[in-house]
Image (cartoon, rainbow, N blue to C red; front, side, top):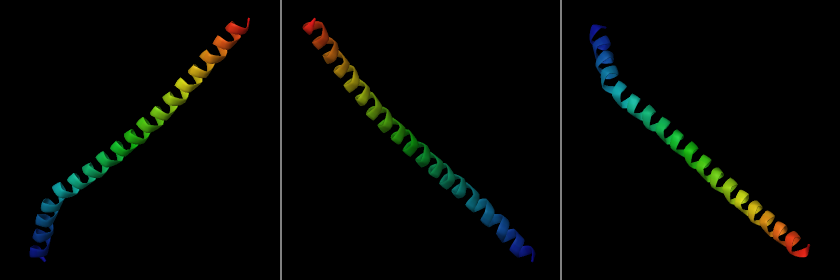
Length: 67
C-alpha cells in the first residue's frame, strides 16, 4: 500500500506543473478569443459610427445648400 501512495505522490508532483500549464494555456486562449471578438465588435461599431457621421454631414450640407 505504501508503494502505491508514494507512486501517487510522485505522479501528482509530475502532473501538477503540466496541469497548471494546461489550465493557464486554456485561460490565455479564452482571454485572447474574448479580446479578439471584442476588438472585432469595436471595429464594427466604429465603422457604423463613421458612416452615421458621414451621413449626418451630407444631410447638414444639403440643408445648408438648399437654404
